[in-house]
Image (cartoon, rainbow, N blue to C red; front, side, top):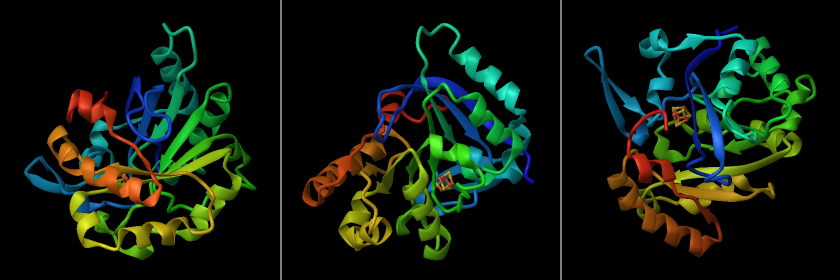
Amino acid sequence: MKPLYLAESFLSIQGEGKYVGAPSIFLRFGGCNLTCKGFGCEFIHNGSKLTGCDSLFAVYEKYFKQDWQIFNAEELFEKVLLHAKDLPYKPHIVITGGEPLMHYKNHDFYRLLRLLENFFVFVETNATILVDFDTFKEYKNISFCMSVKLSNSGEKYAKRVNKKAIEAICKNAKETFFKFVLSEQMIKESAIKEEIEDITKGHNVPIFCMPLGRNREELDKNSESVISFCIKNGYNYTDRIHIRLWNDKRGV
Ligand code: SF4
């Protein structure tokens, strides 16, 4: 079993998706089963040029593992309590990555969910990993944001779309919704609506579309096209408030 690496944790507001604006503690776990090079973020690390998404520091284990830390469930829970210690309420807990469900069978990961039973827990996933909800019943008590990747991620269809995994989440999770990342170029050039329909077909859950943008400039470039696309097709638009406020700063 892979070690449970935490890439970062912080208290902020949820910047995107259905719960935008909600005060949230983010636990970002390291490691991902995709690389999404099509999103085009570049980072030079010890002379190597890495390409991927804006969370690539939580994706490439080979390059960033030394910056990640291993914690057990109790230590992670302590971290959550520390972030929340001055708050007179319970913030949301956002479990993200990388791909956090790579660890879904991990003893400490699963135990952490039990320790967090009095919080609203929310997992952000690419929905490619088939969760066994019958054996790991705790997952039925949490919410899932399914950020299934489209062709603009650069990943092959067979790797980025797992319909059984999506179906299991839709059938078993306490709550779920889809969140897709779109760019102006993709809306102009691809059969994007068909891609979204193929993935969401048969599932009566909300669909959110979000502009691609690792910084304000990119976000500005893509937002209006995504808004028009949402209005035309009846999808929900979600912005990326943390990028609007803090640009490409990490840990906010
Ligand atoms: S699945 Fe998410 S975290 Fe993983 S590489 Fe793609 S965008 Fe990044």
